Image 1 (tube, rainbow over the protein chains, first blue to last red):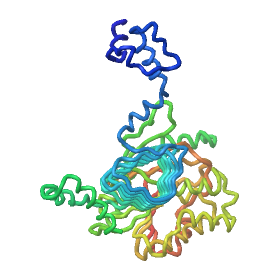
Image 2: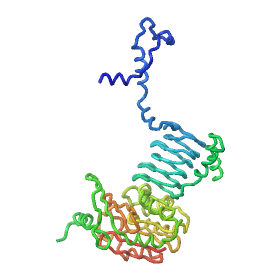
Image 3: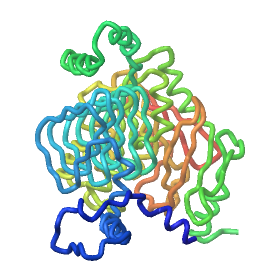
Image 4: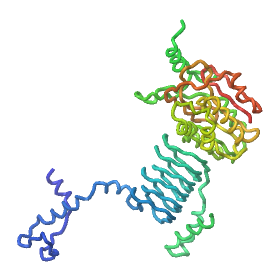
Length: 193
Length: 230
């Protein structure tokens, strides 16, 4: 048991006292191994909400106290738990609307997961999930749709076949630099509009 | 022996359920031990005829007034049709309140409700799945809804509706309808509600008098299937 606790402690190399920046609490008279432990305690005081955020790691996030009016173009996954008005485009990525999220916008994304409210037309190239208690008012165009019991949906559903564009786009990177792929995606969106 | 009202309704509601054509209801069960939901599967000849009527065609527009369910979405979109989903009963509750039919004859409220639930261009749909929604409406609202559905449905298209065949019930079950196969429906009962309006065959013929034809599918159980040709 005690050994386990030691394993959980951060393994930090011992730093000689001279290298520490002088601080108001610093007591250079008695440098010891207990010093790093104090720092570890400070780190653990971060809010536990961070663990929730871990599930959304790697995606941009709009918190529930945030309201945005305008256009969002993203080249990474996006989690929206606040208010959003305008348009949202994540052509190659996933949009998640959190339980507090309220989107009043046209949405284009690879994948959409709704736990909150979306009012506007949604184009999801791969799939859309409308979870229990979510509310979606608008027309949907997607390849696959998942609607949980308890979700509210008003609008039309068009099932589209996934575009074979990806297969055709594969040869491009061979002749183009690696940074090229995102650009054609946004160009395609403009052409569609 | 004549039974008192509630017990009679209970027996009609619980034990009287059999599948269409006298077949015993398949898969009749309680959804969960402490959950009042009842789930049963039944054969539906009207549903079969509704879809056989539009077989071989794709890209049609179908309106489902029962709200969105995974099964109905899968079935209708797999046939290549475009599905429009309206949670008719939810909008009804939002507009008039739960179990309140006092305002069902208020012209302003009726107009508002129609704008919320059935605001589509004329001749827009190739088929309308009404399920049992019409039974929740008092006469004035019912007439307005039937008239509006008739407007937004194309000429020669069909509407599928369900009605309780026992017109003496005091409370009627609330169902959700899910399409399992071309001729198979899953009905989930969520408790009961006071009967607003119940119809016999003559009442239904009168209700749909302005349409081309009304076809009844008689079953031995309480739920009558009706196909209306617009």
